[in-house]
Image (spheres, rainbow, N blue to C red):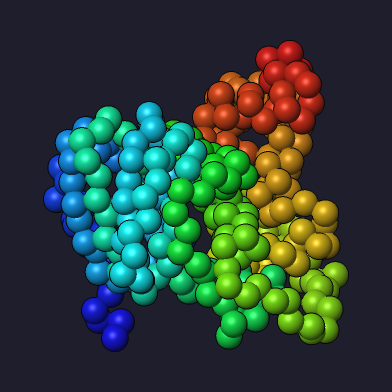
Amino acid sequence: MTSNLISSIELSQQLNKINKTLMFSSRQMNWNGILVEQCQIPASAFEIELSALSDHWLNLHVGYPTPLIQKRDNRLHESILHEGDSFLVPAGQPSYWCRGGGVICAPLHVCLKPGLVEQVAEASEIDTGRLDLVNCFGQQDLQLQHIAMLLLSELKSGGMMGRLYVESLTHVLVIHLLRHYSEVAQAITSGNRSLTRTQLQQAIDYIHTHLNRDLSLAELANVINISPTYFANLFKQATGISPYQYVIRQRVERAKVMLSKTNLAIADIALQVGFSSQSHLTQHFKRFTGMTPKQVR
């Protein structure tokens, strides 16, 4: 059955039939369980029928209002998509789309691996046996739009903020979908889970030792041999902040020490503490300290 499902790559190829132009893609960025792409679709009319997808497909409309027709369950659903409107096609569901002549738009496509969604559900104590994302069309959801635009911004920057940032955003996105776009998102009752003091210290020691690296949840979770999604939840439970936020704070703290105790160029310090550039360091440094690195030095 799964062999009949089309992948995100095949989805992109199918969409090429409407002469879309790919503008940005995370395909070469190795983001875990998520593909983010923005394309430009011409103003001409189109009609396209898509086979069932292997991934969950989220589409965010970017551009001027445009009419769009979706066919599912042998019924036509017509809507005028406005800036920020979205539709969600769960994995395993075919779809049919039709648009008359309209305006040029640049939708954002987000494909999520079902395995990742299940991992996040398990780590959030949601019963995956009763988990079904639902088909939504023309939905206006400001929080979903905000998360999607942060992903687009990171995509356009070439991944400046790093893998931990993308994984944190992905986790937030999946939780939002589970809470608001699933058939049944019933929490399962289970014993309280938490990191032991030893596990937490091992993770923290690893972060401090490898601050200069583009750390990922999988890498950190592997230190204490648990799944990345469980690690993200349990780390925040233990420290009050996400792994990404903790790493950024530690990088800023180390940069403060190096600024006061060394004569290294600020750009070199930025790279040594794990920021992608001097401007990346300055952005977070000012957010946490209220000053720029130059002002501290």
